[in-house]
Length: 621
Image (cartoon, rainbow, N blue to C red; front, side, top):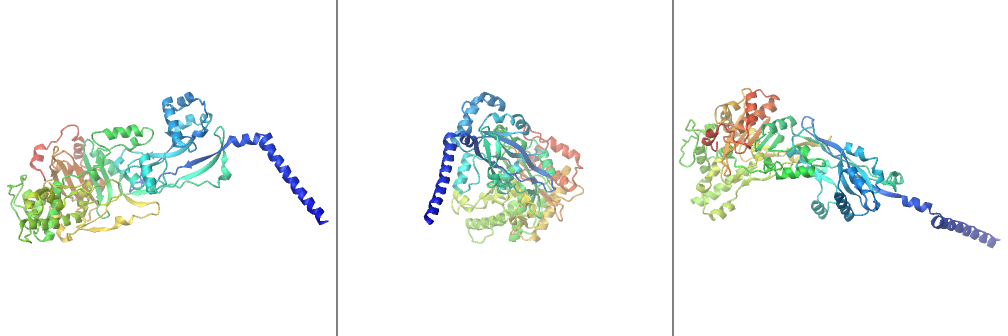
């Protein structure tokens, strides 16, 4: 009985197995419909690019947003032989040579991975081709976004995005950064670069089933392997977009820079590097052509003068010399010296000067004496050794003001400027073979010294704050619930006590109200404290420089302005700076004549300096 049942069970299992094998044989050998169906369905891995974070100004205005574009992608293994390339090229407006080069490059990269074939079709261009793309198996659309602007400002500040280069991709892979792949876009310069990781978001991916004609047949396994793209964080910046536009307007036909900051926080209100460029030029399909044109422009609009150009500061540097000397106890605010021009020239002014008046009238000989007393304090009995001791001590003070070092701004390509070490002078003159007479030009902000406009603006903040500063920065917060990054809240104290600043600030007030600043540049309703500088330039006309802050008490804005090859600081840089102050504090411009006058000045294409002789007489003032 048991054996009979066992045979029956074995027979049933054998019969089922035989039927299944017979069915499998029929499907695979006799009936090829299943084979054809499988061949006609393939799996397509589609990258979903996230929306890049939006950048806002300090008042909530959008500085940069996202615009949808469409990349035509190619999967080389699915491209049919004998496809109608003539029609394809006509449809997309490319030549057969371009088609051949691009498809070859795609096959070289990978036959089974998609590559960009035609990049950044606009919405209108996409609408014209979307219904015809079905006739070209292996080609499909991948939507993504590029940057959009409702203005033509902030090119240098915002920076631009571009396709990752092969060199950078290889570099990232060596560093263990495997996020990017060929065809990806990333921030190349400006805030787009510095905050790339926050702005870029996170890519998503979806797996779609497509037939032989490229028509999607749905998500593979109902999308259980798909991941959604995560949009990037928004940036809330410190920039005042209207002030930025106004500054760029004032600097038209001028080379140089304006930087406006809030002294209490280190927030940058505006940063102008001129000549600049319209950020709209570096987006879309004309990116390469426009970038090449900008790169070849002799005026260097891609060069960020505000962070990278080292200028001799000229007479604005006298403020730091006076503060250092008072802290060292080698002068006091009532010290009076005559304007003896045996070594350096000076422009006509009432004299002799005390400290406040020396700032008001920017007396060069006064600061020869100030610097001499800092450097030679007779601490060793040997002139050469005294100079080394004094110079090293002086350099410590300058470093505490941020001179000769990177300030740590949230922007790539910041330069530290020029502040020479003792070793430098040892190489030039020989160890212990140089003294005050070899470096006295530093006393009036000339010689082996170079400050970027950012350093100058930071100087103005130090003066406004009576001895301290915060790291200059562009970003208030990252994301809706973010806060100001911690490094921008750190207070940097200089080596000079607050009590020494008042006499300097009074001198700066006098300089604007009745000193080296052109009378037309003064404001009646706001007390501005400023210092002019006319820096000698070995390559051409002098640079016009001015730093200021306002109001005198409880200041809310500090400004540094540099206008290359334009002459006296009080006649060019000062008016521009005070117009920026007026715009920020009042939101309107009452001094229309001054505004029109500064707009008309062209220091690039022809000489329009109306104060040439006065500028010559006032060098370093």
